Length: 613
Ligand code: C2E
Ligand code: MG
Ligand code: MG
Image 1: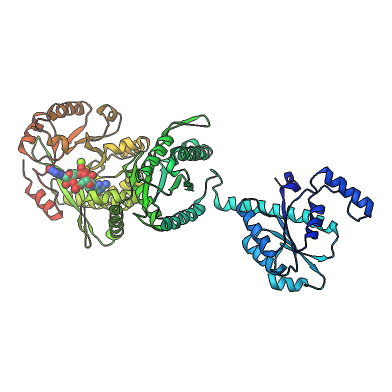
Image 2 (image 1 turned 135 degrees about the vertical axis):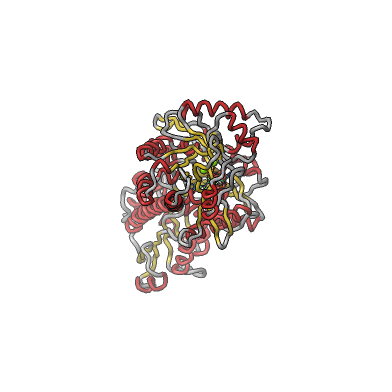
């Protein structure tokens, strides 16, 4: 870029109180056309001047008679985006500022400008100047009277130095404030702009919005198509977003500069300053989502994506950078959970929900150590004999701080943060030990069912843990039934099927829990190594309620029998339901009608009573 610059690209400012000297500079540096040049050659022939013969300088020269005037000109030039590269400043310019004072102010306004201080020998020494102006590599002292060659050389050298400085600064600025991949502003610049927008908003009473946008499951793209494709995709997405922002600007907002930035990874952020109507932000968000979900061709791969967008408004939701970032992030997080392709606004209640979650998470971390978990056991009854066959172990958490927390509240949380792996292992160990103990007491228990979550099931040590627990408790593998849900099979078929086969090889029984609520068909389950279907409570509930569930249940029983699967009907609460289940040959049932889940002692009594239903 440097090599392309001509002298005429550089502006030089002369500050000197002597008009005649202005002319000298002009003649030396600002030769504009051939006429000038001829005149000069004539001049030198006539007067035998020492001027170099061939002068092709063509600098852009402006002159000021006083320091103040020069400083004003420099500021104006900078604001117009046409800054001066070099200033030649006279040492003495009565009655106004002297050279040193002028340079000091000049640098305050334009720190990049290169300066030549022109002084008579007696005026200042280099030491004096350094003392007064501080050390600088942007200053040269030229002693009067000077040779024009010196002026030309300095003009050349200093304009090039200035250009190089500008270029380096530009590159450093780009490196520091822009994202190398997409060329969008980075987080640092974004935060700076947000701060500026908020300040302006406060001053002029303007409202605005902050958008957080995250591409859903972007990791999958990287994992399946590779990082190169992933990077290219991010580039294309940022181009789409930039174009979309321009296109969605309403006339009223044309003068406001929206800022879009890459915050890192697949996360982008947009500032929409000076919003007239809050729904303008929604419009922008929806258009962005719409644009980004259009199928996109990346290096020959057709990719379809969805996004999650969170929106927060200022000043309503907050008026400082930190609060707004937190709000937008929370809204985006909620959008992710609601997704795909959801747009969510920040709401105060999100904070409360997060606080609750954090509190629960903190207590949950200590729950195992503090012995706050227990298991309850719900009887499973054979409908042909009317007697107990097994128990399902159900986890209970009694927290001193939060009270009894239902499993459906804390298990999803434990699944998300991974604690379920440890908790689940505790459940398995405890349930198997308890089962063994009852069996050893000669009580009529044939099977213990334990619920397993996806995270636990896919953990690479799961099957090892199961076999280890079986050895420790000396429970026979076929006495343990693991319950997995239908949706688990759908979410990661290869992983789940691999584990299923490993467990099957050990001889452990597998039940599909909540059957009928997922999307799988019996046909899909046919090839899986499973033993039992647990018909979801919602189907049982529909019996004799005119919901036409009976034919479905009938068909499921027939097909399951054909496939050699056992069936347990869950959530049986009425005798009517039992009667119907018996007529369609349902082998087993479980529900409040027989018993609620029982603690250790009550479960022991239940076994001892050996009631017949
Ligand atoms: P699930 O495995 O389907 O367990 C059956 C749930 O239905 C239990 O709720 C049980 O108390 C309830 N239930 C049983 N009979 C009836 C009935 O007749 N009527 C009604 N209305 N409800 C009945 P619970 O104990 O609240 O457990 C809820 C869910 O939490 C379980 O559903 C299971 O998915 C999960 N869960 C419980 N313990 C564990 C565990 O140790 N590990 C894992 N991963 N999940 C567990
Ligand atoms: Mg279950
Ligand atoms: Mg169930």
